[in-house]
Image 1 (cartoon, rainbow, N blue to C red):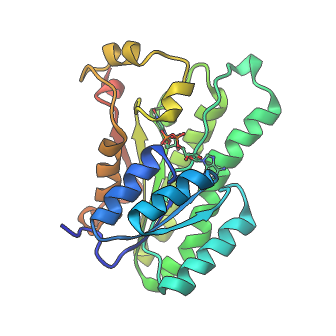
Image 2 (cartoon, rainbow, N blue to C red; image 1 turned 60 degrees about the vertical axis):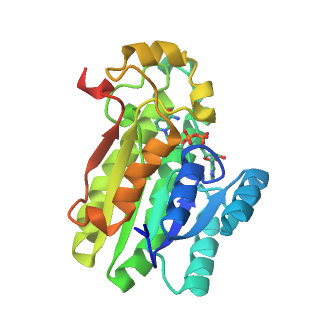
Length: 242
Ligand SMILES: NC(=O)c1ccc[n+]([C@@H]2O[C@H](COP(=O)([O-])OP(=O)(O)OC[C@H]3O[C@@H](n4cnc5c(N)ncnc54)[C@H](O)[C@@H]3O)[C@@H](O)[C@H]2O)c1
């Protein structure tokens, strides 16, 4: 299958975890994949495996985004898909959260998504088409007890998704958010909760693999989701239904 044939796709945080699963799947589906991350060894190894491009990008850097988007558009002549996937997690309750930590989590998880959308939108508007997929979380739908900065950032992603979707809809650009539950990636090890405990609480009785989120991202990146914009796509084994 080539569900992303002729589509140029940029995936942030693509060196490992869900972003790497998306890079593999998108490449297999005929997409031209660019990976951006701060983990250069992992990113370079994956780009060699997939025969795609890797670039260092700290998503909180405005100039970094400008340089990368310009490079992609110069090299490929277009940019069809942005997966705003890069993120960090910090576990602190409200009264224990240092301001510096709150600011860094917001910088990466929320400002990074804002900058990404703002920088790719002009090219997508010019093309009259594009799909932006923002990775939020179940923590962007409910209280993130014990991780207030993370929760704030993921609610910001959900809110920005809707604003951008409405502003860009008549330009042919769709914007949606994905809300994963517990996915078995390196980030899951930082959550401070046992995977077994979450699995037991989850209606489907298990946690999930990165590839399962990648399948949803593929649907949203492709033209198969042509009538979806401004929407929340939940992939959580039924946790949010409890
Ligand atoms: N794993 C989960 O259970 C879970 C649940 C809900 C949402 N999410 C979200 O899914 C996304 C992917 O996370 P993951 O589970 O693959 O975790 P991960 O830690 O394996 O991957 C995150 C990637 O983002 C990169 N990154 C971090 N800071 C960056 C920065 N400043 N600039 C560029 N790249 C940066 C990391 O280097 C890493 O490659 C994140 O946005 C995360 O918040 C994860």
